[in-house]
Image (cartoon, rainbow, N blue to C red; front, top):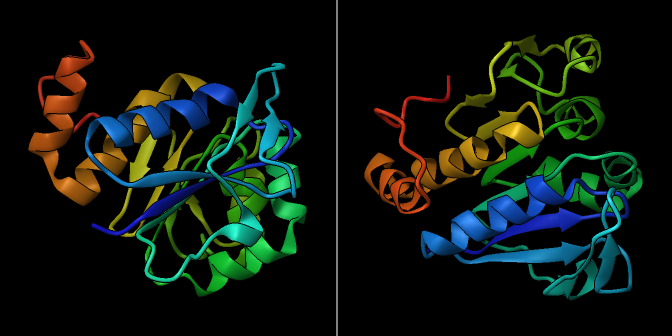
Length: 190
């Protein structure tokens, strides 16, 4: 299985980032937290400081499966302003997942939503549409190589959608059930 990376910038939405890491690791997926600064310590939007596994400069992104962007403000803006991340996202051959403000603030301006269906935090849809996205009012929008989520309350669904995409619905169902999440099927995302 290939390694995945989730990028943390000052002001990231803690529940969106940490839920994804937790769920993917429960599923046995290799995911690393990445600081986009020179410090491994990154403060979230609600004052929770997280020590990442690595910094962006230390990471080897070759052959990575997922590049994941939590939202939060100003976290999404800080991700957008970090040019090296934008460059990486544009050439990435694997899968991308973004939640909350990040689909609109990070992915849309890079052209990564052009002609694709997506969801994002309410109020940011116009930014996505401006760059050619078709917006859906759903908690999580899942495509083959792109998963978007609308915000903090969808973090668990978003994370399970990533697991289902990589390892199948049955593994996502097992992980979700072990966490006492009981959808009738894994089709809780669009």
